[in-house]
Amino acid sequence: MKKVILLCMMFAFSNVIIAQTAKEKAAKTKVATEKKVEKVKVDQEKKVAKVKKEQDKKVKEANQDISKAKKETNEKVSKAKKDVKAAEASAVGKVKVKEAKAKATLSKSKVKKTEVEEKEDMKETAASKAAEKKVADKVSGSYKGKKVYTGPKGGKYYINKNGNKTYVDRN
Image 1: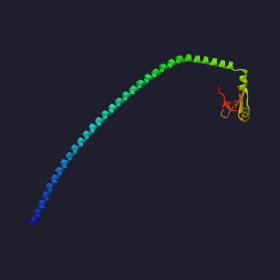
Image 2: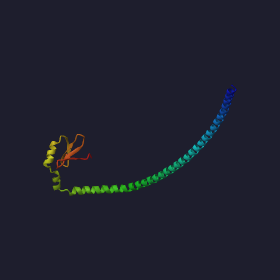
Image 3: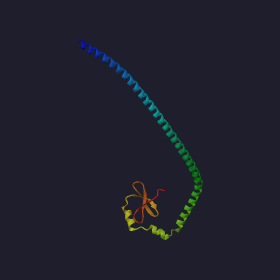
């Protein structure tokens, strides 16, 4: 019986010793994990700071590019405004010249047509007569000696010598 009691006592003491070492081990691992966590936090802070610096650099570069682009566009706009002013000044003169040329060509075209040409324009072929008969639109006047019809949408036209519809400008 003495042996059994001794055996139980040894077992109890060994558990006490092992239990104390387990607590010490737990404390040691806790300290080690805390150190690792601190290292990871420091590393992450360094990475965050590095990324922030890179982003700041990129933002500065983008702002510089934007300011350069603004300057360039402002320069282009000012040049365009100068060109427009110059063009307006010269355009007034050009418009007057164009108007004079247009009047001259109109007077020349009126003079050049002879009676024979006018009669040829007035000729009506069988196709144009047949086309006039088929038209169901209203007659609203005359243009170059031809009847002017008004279509369903308000467009005005006449039948030319080929029998085709030729639309008249609204002016």
